Length: 606
Ligand code: AGP
Image (cartoon, rainbow, N blue to C red; front, top):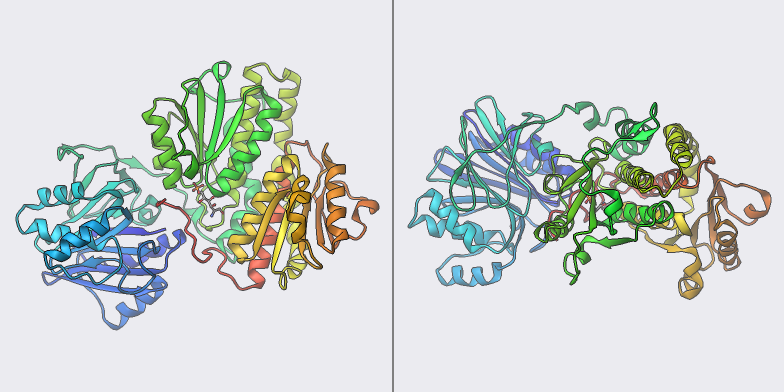
């Protein structure tokens, strides 16, 4: 989704802005732009498509300036076009914006009546003209303040003023924004990742905060316009994890390193010597938990769907799962005895954050399971369980899904043990089994890397695909279908195999690829009969199982054999062939693996 960068320096900022915009490319975008102050005037350059195009424009017609803002835009209001790309500038002001201004139509009318001529279809341009208008009467701080008060909706802003030609201004409501401190220059960024190549000293803005950056200081104001001091954090050095290395793309790297991220995560939570799980300062006594509600979007929601099975098998606690965009608007009775768990890789997903915010306002207990520990969701929840997966750059979530599942599983085992709902023997056995998970994942990776490319060919002519599973394999089927959709743009459905007869069986026709997830568990025989029903109707079955024998494999087009392990850990292994399958189908179709069309890594607007 959109990304912001701003730099106040005493040397040229153009190349650093371009490099930082490149770092933000992973978020998904369709146009880019930059504005600097050159000889006292605003100089704006924009383009559709990649930052490379912007670089080409700058090569032909270089920009200068020691003060600048840059943006990558993911279209919400108005098509992806040069006119709609940010910055949006008037003679006096230039603005880059992440988020959505909900009252932009009303404001546009008022501003048009005042004579302002809009060049774009965006909601952002109203901010430019509001600032321009207030500036005629008020000083800098009042201009910003009055503008922000007029806006409804969510935003992170980067602003340049012609009149105040030594400052970059930032403001936040709803959408994340960070300030970074460098040698004789200061930075503004929509996430710390964009700033990391320049600094590891960061301050996160809270909702309502405004910051004014010069090259040698940063002033912060809160929503009441009071000057405030804010904490500076030092970011951890994870340079090695944000480079592609020898991998073709980030997604391959992220799939292939899952054995290592799982190992790290297990080390963080599991004490193999004492055979125990460390969960210090958990915000609610497990014994007092009435109900657990697991909330997330997309892949994160699928990890919640997975965890429901584990929690229900391991504990007596009622579990609900919810999609954040639904949860936030339903008339839900929030209960102080419940635990609300928010799952998010980025920790910045607008809907998940809004759902958490609703819980915070109702003073119920919250816990977040995130990858980015400095994120808004992590900072706002009562308790944070990091997944320790390291930066995930590919838009399609892979290692973060595995990490989210792992932390949820570890949480389920621990809660079950504290509530004495599993025996000590069983608890210790589960901890012991976890020790083997990284190696099992590695083994599965090696095997599937060799076998999935051939299977992917079968999807080339298909007009869709289905993913079927029962029990613990059903959420994995959902995730497999999502991966195929987002990477290869093929229509895919994830379904509980037992539901097929209630409608979806009508979709099965000669040659339709159907991925059947059938590990040897208590659903095995039933899943296999569902598979036969698919075969009987001409479906081209790809069977993923840990119980290969001739009878079940008859008439199956491909069988992938994953290693045997305890039933609760099998979903981790089932996930891998699905990730690789989606990857290889997308590769054969020449899709942009790390940046699928229309998608963004962190969905910061609703
Ligand atoms: C997954 O591959 C997706 N691109 C998407 O569904 C993602 O999981 C979702 O947007 C939630 O993101 P989050 O984990 O950062 O909150």
